[in-house]
Image: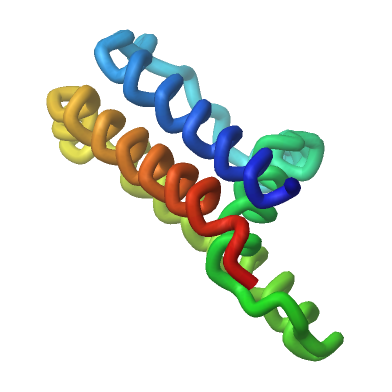
Length: 137
């Protein structure tokens, strides 16, 4: 039942991403303040935002339900949690660094519709896979 619910939720998120692909992003220039206090505050805000976002946990749980074995050890679970942290932190650092540059940000905005529709399609496909293969042990 959890796999079906997770798959339906993934598909729902994918459809929302697909439908919102043509919605333009606000691209007003941001005034940056330099200093380590601002960087620490930004890191803390980003961490708090990510940890308080239930979608992240639901998406990971849905993907894990589709691809991970049903029985695991404590060491395996700890390794997976560490891997998720490294992937998430690395991804958001990469996105922040890349999209804070004018060239990559402009290219992303130019191809946003295509990129969002690709991401939405992948999420729908994962959700459908999860729903249709949920009954297999």
